[in-house]
Image 1 (cartoon, rainbow, N blue to C red):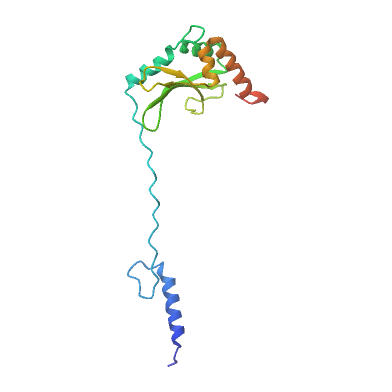
Image 2: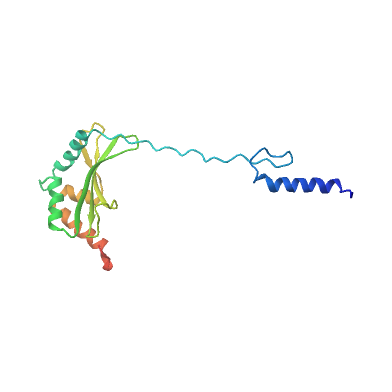
Length: 176
């Protein structure tokens, strides 16, 4: 029987152990390398669930926005409907909703709308105008955005703003 050097035996045992360590899930041999513990992903920070206002309170806030008086004496809703009738291919109202902060505080009433004909009812990529809700929920303050300010000014001012937005959005032969 041929004698094998001690170093060769240890090297062979270690190589064999490393080769089998990943394949053998039952009790590993003494010479097998320890498998590292599985790495677990850090828990994802849970986004807080928004607790909306009761439907009647949301309706009261949206009605408050609709009933605001514009500079020409018409209501905000009249301004929006007028623009939709005057420019049916350029402007369409999508939704009016209450927007919430992460802590479930109602922060604004917003009207989402589309510029141009290229729109789908499920399309969430719309523009918006809005009014910030006061902490006591008793009043609304218009955003300083040009479109909101145009609605606040009245029918003709908002139609002119729509014409400008449409010209900008559909310039250069873009399909809108």
